[in-house]
Length: 120
Image 1 (tube, rainbow, N blue to C red):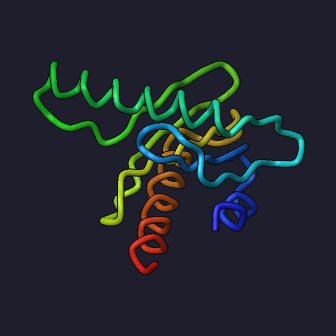
Image 2 (image 1 turned 45 degrees about the horizontal axis):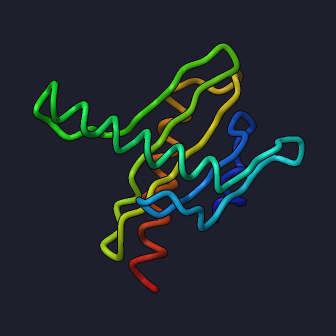
């Protein structure tokens, strides 16, 4: 599913799905992208948890996602809304992809992943 979604868009460079505690369980990447899924999963899960804690502390509200903007593109980290467990999805997009489209990709992919997990 991640590979199919990745091929449907030009700007997304990779996606990594992980458990909430940071263990990579699935990933997809463009052929020219070097990726260490275990490292991405660990960092993304920690960053999402930190963002959620910061949102609760400062706004007294849950965070919807965590994002990073850089000169090379953007990173989006979202929760996978599965009833079967706590999972995260992280993606990186290059500058050709708008942030809004990267976020939409992440949210739609997370929703589809949740459906697959919940049917299993």
